Image 1: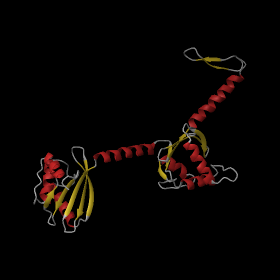
Image 2: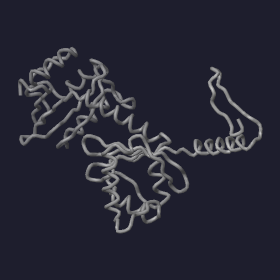
Image 3: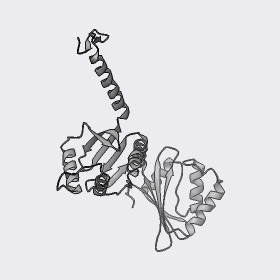
Image 4: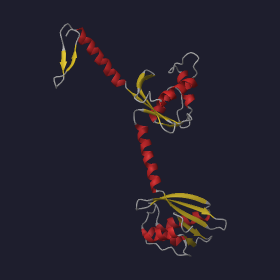
Length: 276
């Protein structure tokens, strides 16, 4: 207990401090708070708020909030609460009722873990809003993540794409609506296993063109070290339309009897028609 790298405080059934371990004494001393055996939990809270290490909820006075905490302690059995301190740190306060009626309070500094969690959430939220469809499948073929665009697309063909969804069921539905054509004697599972192997080989990493409900996409698929796979579908409708326009223009220029040459700004020849 004394050498544990976490803050531990033991309270008796009357909410008076029995003991605080060395880590807790040291941390509270840095905050200008002296933990003394026999001090009440009420006095403990008052010193916390008076020291300014964290703020009161905006809709409570100090006296009202302390009273609320004291009332909650009477029926407490086990509870965990994240607290953001004014120094930027985040601690998880865990309270557990002991057999003798006392309470063990533990504070764990989870700042780094919370920062990682927040970063991952920000990343997830960002991916959720991009116009590309993104799906991540686990190595055992369960959906780990699908962004809004991917869910929206699958909704149009009556498939509920959500965390935990089966990749085989996903493929079966593509076959059902005619978006995937199976070879003779090939099952949807055979197709899935073939697609996974091709992804693992890196064949689709640079992207391949697919068409979904009349819309052209570039599908890029990447296999990760843990066996999961990420699939990104980029709508290239605008690019395809521009390509069609360019093809029409080239065909029109080639049909002209006049010789036409197009040079870039550096005097490099870019195009000549058939009459040139």
